[in-house]
Length: 158
Image: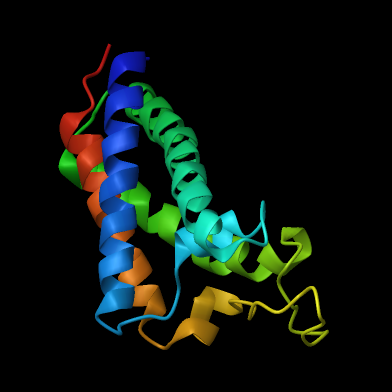
């Protein structure tokens, strides 16, 4: 495994994906703010949460970049198209599995079964994060496709 490629392109891919998702939120395509959602898992301070969330998203991106690299090494192919194909599964997993279980691990998020409380005030994302807007899955898929293209396009096989 090429650890340098994983470290560099996992970092770059995560930052680009975070930027794209922030842009989608700013343009009104989605209401989801991943750095805020991740950061509020660690702190109730809403301003500090965004900074911590970016850090968590980058760490998460490195973990995913390791998985992408393992797949590239296993297939002995690393290119944009393979990276984008992997990213489709990555996005679908995040939307269909990760988002619905987020209330179970997030200390400040209400669940779909239990409404908000004084501590749990954040809206749960729901299946495919649709509670944050009907176009949310499209924005998430787009950002993940770019992440996958970066991983596949720049990863160098060992």
